Length: 469
Ligand SMILES: Cc1cc2nc3c(=O)[nH]c(=O)nc-3n(C[C@H](O)[C@H](O)[C@H](O)COP(=O)(O)OP(=O)(O)OC[C@H]3O[C@@H](n4cnc5c(N)ncnc54)[C@H](O)[C@@H]3O)c2cc1C
Image (tube, rainbow, N blue to C red; front, side):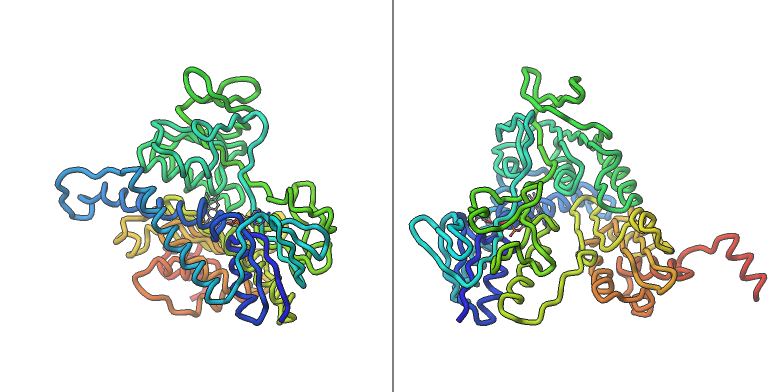
């Protein structure tokens, strides 16, 4: 039986352990903390539990619009919200422990590091596995000049521990974590100001999506200051102050620093093992997650390729497949969906229109607004759209971008197609249930291919029809 050691028990490490053990490997899983990693304890799960309470709260506030009479008022209780996510985290953590037990994975509590290429040390134990998979994840970036004290100026890890919420907060950053927390906190009645270094929110996604997100956030009372690269955040008598070019630009009771995450590659003895890192401290891997050292793999946030939990798990399974000489299907990074749990929700997969332009592709765009959908009206969520980008020459789907309810579920229609280099026509030919938001995916693709069923004809189209009929 071949022996795999895994450093780190997050969505990369514990998923690798489960996969390897299920396919006949002896597995040792090493982590100093309860299994589940950032995803379970400080990331995906606690934040999504909070998002769900906020979605419910916002719906309750609109009860009358839905024909419901309310008696009394509704408000959020931060300590009870924290209690709920702690319970969910504990329950899911137990599930992971049970899974490891079920697979006969040996779990060791402690920090692991390399003594040399073939040998690991965890406290006073020495392990000589046939291969090692490094899944030590990442931690929040905290640049010099940001006086992070955890209590007034904190990262997302700190915020989830806060005993109470402030009346006002500066959020430094404009990516997924910044935007998700902005929506959560605003919904919990915190006065939120986003300080973004660039000219738009969610700049990794499609520009049209950012425009709608910014509009909706503004409507909800979230302030955004753009082109504002903060160099210093400090506590002063009047509150937490953010500085740009030596000038104070914003002040609030507290600040959340959400400007990115760094790979957790220090103190692992990587040099002794011959594992190379790049300039950002990320472990260098090839498409099979092999590092520069023989029989050492790295998956998840620590290799800097994605920063998403599901990508971490997929990479980890691929590394295990290679180790066990199983069939390996390299991951198509472009087919990895991204879900952002803002309000409205966002999800996308594949190229943005800006990327399609940059790559000089010949493409066509189809778009369908949710306000034309029955289900969107029933949900009372008509802001948003689906946008499909399709290659003109071969009809392949290049990208799918969704902003609106259930976006994180719907995006998989596009992910499936992108994974198999499929044609948009396949999606168009698939009958979609009514009334659903998924119909907007169908209509957007129809629009890209010629004409969406429920989209009004333009004057030009009317003219063409008259001319050629
Ligand atoms: C606020 C927030 C919200 C997020 N929301 C989402 C989301 O909705 N969807 C999504 O896809 N992603 C989300 N993410 C990102 C996601 O959490 C990460 O991409 C994911 O956790 C990475 O998994 P990983 O296994 O690579 O690392 P991690 O989950 O960070 O796990 C690394 C593990 O390694 C252990 N470790 C560290 N050093 C050692 C050592 N020397 N020896 C042994 N073990 C060690 C750590 O204790 C930890 O348990 C979010 C992140 C944050 C911060």
